[in-house]
Amino acid sequence: MEKDILIDLKGENNNAFGELYKNHFGMINRFVLNNSGTTTDAEDLFQDTMLVLIEKLKVENFAISASLKTYIMAIAKHLWFNKIRMSFRETELTDIHNNQFYEDIDNSIEQEKTYRDKLQGYIHKITEHCKGLIHDMFFKEKAIEQIQQEYGYSTKHNAINQKHKCVEQIRKAKQKEDKNKN
Image (cartoon, rainbow, N blue to C red; front, side, top):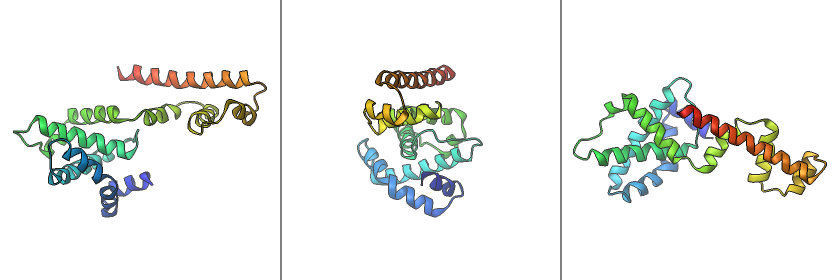
């Protein structure tokens, strides 16, 4: 569903804007009201957030690495805090075309990502077998005995060892990502 909304948004489909407004304006409004703003400010911020999101969608090879909600909130927070910092100068939309602006947005998105979002990103970088095992153990919370039976491990000890190997794959994916950031 998020993917469809992003495709529609990229095509500047008004239904996508309406859907995003319905699903996400409330959180932006609460955020702005809790940070010295008004509902009118929140409406302006939502529109600016949508413009930034559309610009990001136009970038070749852009891939969303968190939930759409996380992206929208990170962009909104970044824009709002930027506006507060420069309270005597309006944040202009021409600032959107500045490369530093996009780097700041990406950093805001990274900071906004939840642990679950980050874990999902790392899980996409491990083997299919480990994806299934990790999903069953940590998201479906299956017992080690059930994992042993479903995956055909001869002993409980073998199932635990495989779990550790899969967790190690995630740890290595995280280290590689952290190394690439530096």
